[in-house]
Amino acid sequence: MRTLLNARVMYPPLLGKLGPFAWAANKFLRMATIATLPHWQRGLADIHQSRPADLLVRLLAKPVFRTLAKSGRLQLALLAWLSPSTAPIAAPFLRGAPAWNQRTLTPAEAFAQWRAQTPGELYTRLHRIAE
Image 1 (cartoon, rainbow, N blue to C red):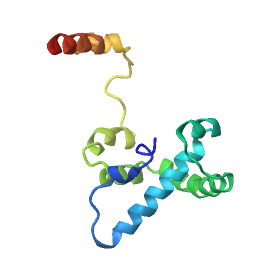
Image 2: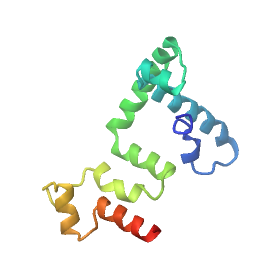
Image 3: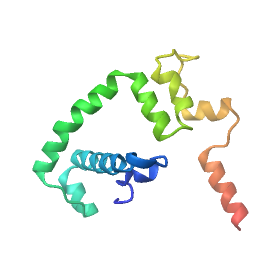
Image 4: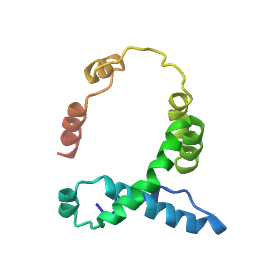
């Protein structure tokens, strides 16, 4: 769980004076994520954060995330910085572009339409190769 809460692995290499920002952003995101976890779940993962820390980070995080939620451009800019290969995939959605096809497919329909193997078929194939 501690590894999952370490956002530093997702940041691109930072130069010069931006390094401390990454440390602060990592700490903030970690505390904000922990604040969303129920206390029983924190106990299972041996993660501790006080209730006053939860309250403080919630008070700080809400306006930040509210601002991000209002601006697709800001979300896209942040995404392009944090995950450059993801930005082109998410850009149409974040820019509000309509879907090419309004129909939602079930997983089975999507696998059939694209002639893709299902996870179960891939799993079976993988085990045959391993034998």
